Image 1 (tube, rainbow, N blue to C red):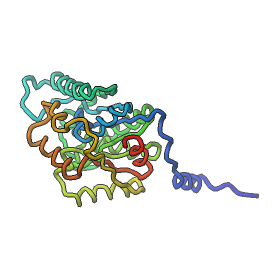
Image 2: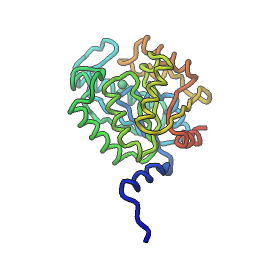
Image 3: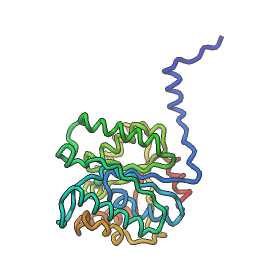
Image 4: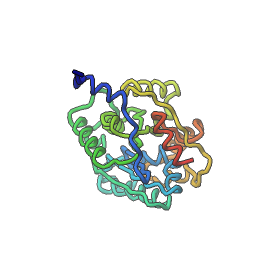
Amino acid sequence: MQRLPSDAKRKKRLDQLRPFFPMSNPFKIFILSPHIDDAAFGLALTISKCANNNIPVTIINCFTITKWTAIAVENKEIDAVSLLRKNEDAAFYKALNSNINIINLDLLDAPLRNGYIFQEQHFKQNELKLVEELKKLLQLHVDGLLLCPLGIGNHIDHAICREAVVQVYKNMNVLFYEDLPYANRITSSQIATHLKELEERLQVQLSSHIDGLHNCTIDKEQAIRVYKSQVNDEICSEIIAHLTAVSGERLWGEAEVIKELRGILD
Ligand SMILES: [Zn+2]
């Protein structure tokens, strides 16, 4: 009599045979943006190309309750700054002239939540709770390609987003984008080390896709200047320096998933 493999063995086999999930039809893109500007800073040109190709894009802004600004603003109250940033975001996507869906989760950002910005220790209890909440939300609502920040720069809000995606990675099609301006503040070998650690964590091989500067219908610098409260000259030049250095916007993921995106955008 043939014996069935044990649960553990069967599970291991299934993991090895992990299929690439059929992409939703029509193709949809979801972008996990820790803060209101992260999707635009990292992916403005990519999002614009999606808009030009009529690909539905949903932006999931997570930590949208905030009083953080890069420049002095008239009213520094939490309500006023949160609203100002949401308005800047709406203006950015409206300028792309497309039906882009924005979801604001209205979670407190790091300075309001725990009082620090950069992660220097393992996740605290309330941060792990946020990871769980985000995981549930992603599993319930994402039925397309998910773009997630790499977590370069160690910002705790970016780390929480990435951790949630890492934990559901096996059930989704995911590509990672470079956090800006942070990715411009480290060397390419430090970026390579960051990616190596992620590959080990996910047990996959990641390759890069650069969404190049051809066929761009917007100017990235001009476009991200819409986030007036978040962009000073220094931040703007860092973002553009990175764009120039890698000749576009760089995404990382498994070859099969990259192929799907290329097929849609090329
Ligand atoms: Zn951010």
